[in-house]
Length: 230
Image 1: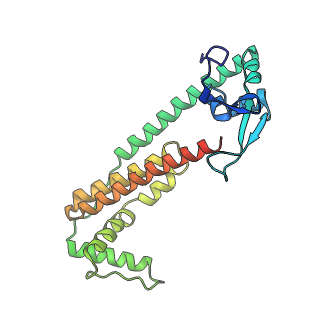
Image 2: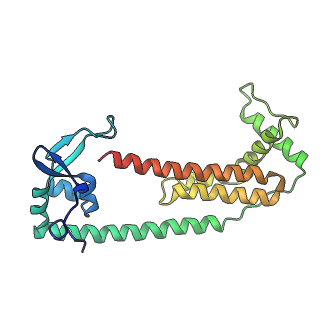
């Protein structure tokens, strides 16, 4: 069982001062194994609410007296509840890992094939597809458009128009691992496009790098935003 505060000293960084009393943030409690449910059940409302020192627009920091936390952590009922929460968390994590891996395996095994057309025909098909999408606007594509533009709309046409990409995204929505899965699916399709049409390799690589870059940025931003809430 994970050590609690009574069994392991905390550092100055773990605590903040409110008046003359040492306090723990909600984040510090969670690092000790506390869950939201345990906090609600055993601690209840925070002892002090303080404006977030890093983000003024963020919710106020929830602070809890260290002495009160220590007293509760000595309670046998709390220790039992903490152990139950730990086991439940481990079970959920294991299940999530297994589900995410199944999704990765599914994407790896997808059969993705494209018709082999001439560059001229592919460009025309891509232009027709683009013009249908933007028919109610002034945007138009022609085989005489710039090479970069034609490469981009050709890759997009192959991905959206000739695969089940959008349906797969729909079916994937809300599943564990779907955030990563969306990028893996796009990367897999781009890889197949580049293999079928080598002249689109640079555009496929650009879109693949962009997709992974957005994924890592969004993942970091979500974590950073969650941390600012506490």
